[in-house]
Amino acid sequence: MEPDDRFLMFEIQVENRGSDSVFARVYAVRLEDRRGRRLRNIGTGMELRWRDHKPEDKVVLYGDKYEFAGIFQAIKEWEGKPIDPTICATTPGTPGTLGYCVASIGPSIPLNEQEELWLTVRIDFHEIKIDGSEGKCLKTRKKRYAIIPDSKSKMYFRVRPVRRIRWPAFLKRRHPAA
Image (cartoon, helix red, strand yellow):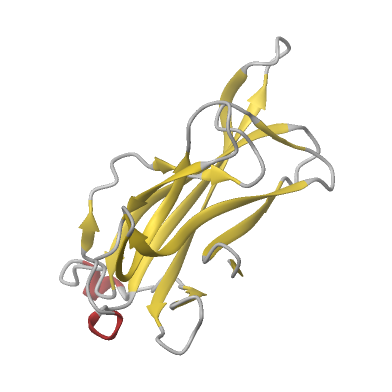
């Protein structure tokens, strides 16, 4: 995940490593605290925005072509009023525009009181049918990121990948994050 400090946005680069052309979709699927407890019900996933594409555009990946998806932003203002830096998912905006909407997924409390959050991002790769429509999902990739409040960063947050913990079999039944 890479920062874009012009928009206080964190984004990921998505590429197709297969030989065929595919449609790609990006979702925020789970928000947790460090102990693995779900903090917000995102349902089956909150679709996220592709950079430089209109919401109705289908992103096609093939060969060496890649695209960037905006995952979340640090919002400092809401309806013209200053607020504490708040994590907001970047979702597609109004059809026909390059704009986007923000959906608050983090608490709006002082940065020094915020805790590390874990956000799981899912990317679905779909086949392209002969008529150009979207077909079945061929492959899914999930990646979990730690979002760490950082008052010294101009982005207000730092991001790092979270490795999945492999719990020993005897702990799996007792540990809530297993």
